[in-house]
Image 1 (tube, rainbow, N blue to C red):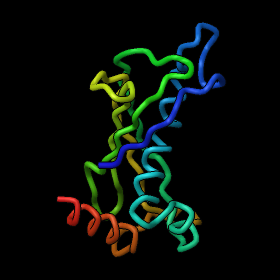
Image 2: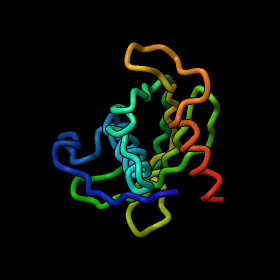
Image 3: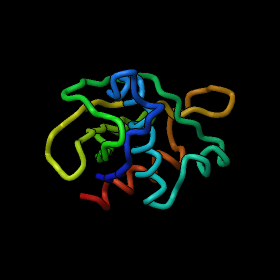
Image 4: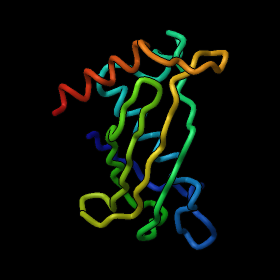
Length: 136
């Protein structure tokens, strides 16, 4: 699990100062990028090696509102890994509390630059598998 702290920016809110629902996917992306970067491999390095991670499924359940300038904690973990895909689960909390604002996941396929599914043996899947073993 990895935690990223950020703040709700003005441009991420509606006229009432409430975080716009679509921004949660941006925060999910921030969390999964930070998780990989903090463990030594950014998404840009994987792309240089010919591996892309397009989102093939996404879900978010909203629990409580977030507001402009509020600090939030994005808790990100890998909850499922197969030879062809990975699922990142995210939970967003009001910073420093256990009050849940939203939870959800994104599922990503392993593909090449030409969009072909990498069925097995790709180095990202092996790296993620090793990462999961080490974090248990």
